[in-house]
Image (cartoon, rainbow, N blue to C red; front, side, top):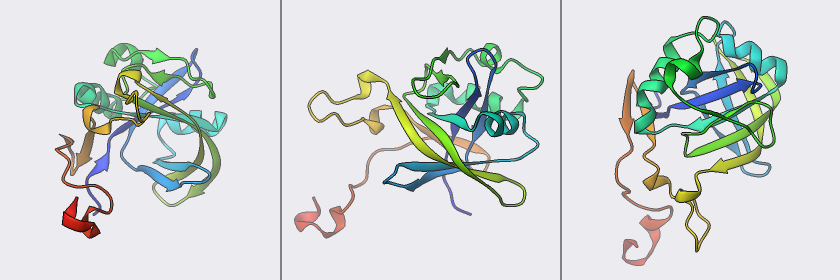
Length: 179
């Protein structure tokens, strides 16, 4: 059991006919080229939309989006208009046809490069083609995205959690004075 996991909303389809699905099985798999993955069960409504268009957007979620994130994960887009039911706002993507979620602090537009059948889930391996960020979370001096201020949430054993305070930075354990 590898926990906690990100709790993201993956959007797929087109602006005219789209859906969102809650995914916890996602992550980065390569830096250059930038690549990530999501794993989705073939019986899910979104699975076929992703497979048909070969693109999707990973939208990071916040504590303020927790109820909508959960709702989108337990209801099928075949039976419900998830945009209407969750109150989230579709926003046009820049490099893909599927929408982003306007309330998301960071949206990662992806094009599927490979689908790997693994059993209960298929893994969609994708190249990152664009990243859209909430401008208020971009440091004007460094251009860095302020993850700590984004209010992101994670998923662990059927529960959602807010991320806590920073406890260190990459490499701090080997630096002089631990800083």
